[in-house]
Image (cartoon, rainbow, N blue to C red; front, side, top):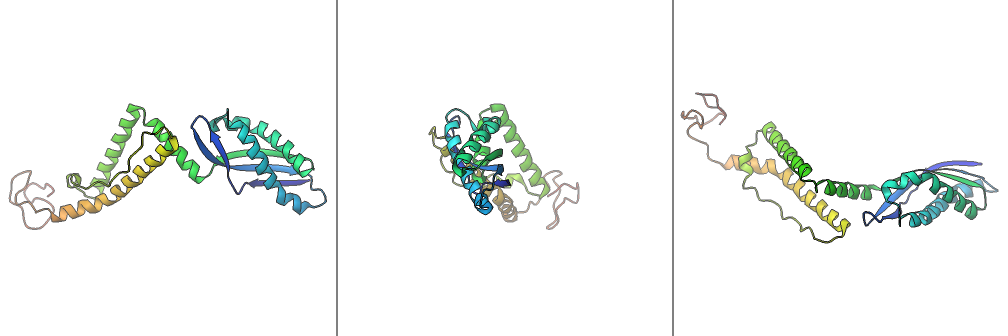
Amino acid sequence: MTEMKFTADKPVMYFDNSMKTSIYLLAEWEVLAEAGENDEFTKSTVPMYAAMALNDVLYEYSRTVPYSALAEKYDEISAVVSEKMTEKLRLPCTAKLISLKPDERSAKMMEQLALMEKMKDPAYAAAELERAMQQARETAEKNGIDLSALQNMPMPEMPAVSETDDTLARAQAMAAHYEQLKKAAAAAPVYAAAAQQTAPRPVFCGSCGGKLPESGNFCPNCGAKI
């Protein structure tokens, strides 16, 4: 008997009817197959036949089973794949499905969809906004940036989010928004520093009214930051 443990090198497409979008999954297998007359041939063909059989099975499951519930079907899937592989190889074969994980692209898409779903809750959206604002305040304070200098910062041109019911299209548009906002956030400290450098130095202290020296960062009378 030949024992094999492998992860498919190519993902299998799974259409999740509940999300109305396709997910690309990488399967991890444990396979026990009779070697027959050519052990090397068996090892080279097992992954191919496993992928073909899994593709057939997932096509049937996609009609009624969402991706989130597939883990409960691993034993059923394994049994059907084993039967199909035995038929194709013409040798006894037992396949055990260990996991079905989204590839990198699908994983990012699913994270975006999950975030979009959470943001429908006004309380969650408000909490996320407050968290982002607090993070901005802490970052500004840490780097000595005056947040008022950012008030006139030009925002990037944001791509429009279509009103389409196509969940994938909306997720991609939201991802484009997120990338533009990241660029704006990265530019904020530079913009603030430039704004502070070009702003005229005050003559009098805003706290005590005392005359300020031409250099230095603190008022010599009250110690307030200039």
